[in-house]
Image (cartoon, rainbow, N blue to C red; front, side):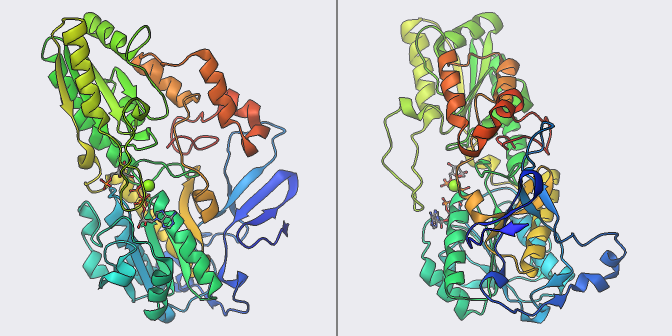
Length: 492
Ligand SMILES: Nc1ncnc2c1ncn2[C@@H]1O[C@H](COP(=O)(O)OP(=O)(O)OP(=O)(O)O)[C@@H](O)[C@H]1O
Ligand SMILES: O=P(O)(O)OC[C@H]1O[C@](O)(CO)[C@@H](O)[C@@H]1O
Ligand SMILES: [Mg+2]
């Protein structure tokens, strides 16, 4: 194996096209750091477990669907405890911060980081940063012990508070230095991970023995590489209640239309999976799939057909869908994310006007907007297990001296992913993938796109590294039905 020596991008190559996109390590910029034996070796709970420690060379492939001649491709370092660690338990001063919007499971991750540090490594100094990034320099800290966090996983939200904006790298790193913090656990979405990356760069520039580790959080599931983000399952499950209500309302009246707006600013995963799970939905509209209202093949025509054939229909719309049809919003939130127009209200009015004015037809539309209800809940059982594994993995990685990484599930395995991969693009539904086709065949809705557009879309998505795997992408992309799944990880 050889390394190309680029510090930001540690690429290690091996036989048959093997590529390890490795994560930085403290020893990359602080040579001769002492190591210690992992206390788990003497812990009766773990020492009996065969091969509890991961092999130093273990890695996880990004793509698991291969042909017999395929190169081995990109791999990520496998997460888990190492024999050697780079911190003495007494020396560790850890902190945890949560940033961005709420997400089911946040408290579980906080709890499990604290528990892992205390009970696996004997680390007793853990601080919670109050209120997101700005909390580093503008707010108080909260001491976190197993007792304090014991039953927080049963509550929605984050006990630490969260915020958008206020990322002042220099002030944050000063605060980390002043407080003597040497492990920084950052839980948040795409914006947060970008923020974590610049904090890491600044810490490395200052030559500090401080690990920066991210845990990806977003109900939109818009973070690339990973199978899915925690909280996503819970959000999809919670959305079922709104869809069910919409269906009950719609089928109880003449020409009933139930319209549900779900979160998803740029990525329509929640709407897509909530639709697939429900089977009561007749039309799902997402940001990645442009649609039109009037004329042949348009949404209004489809609604009319459904009402005539079934007497009712249910529509699910992601908040970012159809924004190109609305006047562009110039407003932004504190983090610089564009504030979208309310597409739910807009489309409700459009449907009502169309049927009353143009069709002279009486319809009964009920608009349900469960926006915050799907994310302000505690994680479900599956998400809680997932959060626990993520938290344990990130702690093992930090104790082993890895830094500048995000912990994430890749093809069902816990891995360490370098920040540049997590931050390279937004993860979106690919409408030329099988999953979207599955949705179309489940709802039987029009695709609103022509063959020409499909071909263009495919070309657009086959770029860069994917170009070499054109056949695979077109033949068999994202073809697994359950996690672990997918070739380019375009689906949860
Ligand atoms: N490019 C960036 N560089 C540094 N900090 C950033 C960057 N983008 C966002 N941040 C900071 O990250 C924090 C969270 O960002 P944001 O509000 O976009 O939420 P997020 O992490 O993307 O989560 P979600 O979108 O799921 O709610 C904010 O404090 C913001 O200032
Ligand atoms: O109102 P807030 O807290 O800014 O959050 C809204 C946004 O947060 C998310 O839940 C996650 O980014 C989006 O789906 C949504 O647009
Ligand atoms: Mg975001």
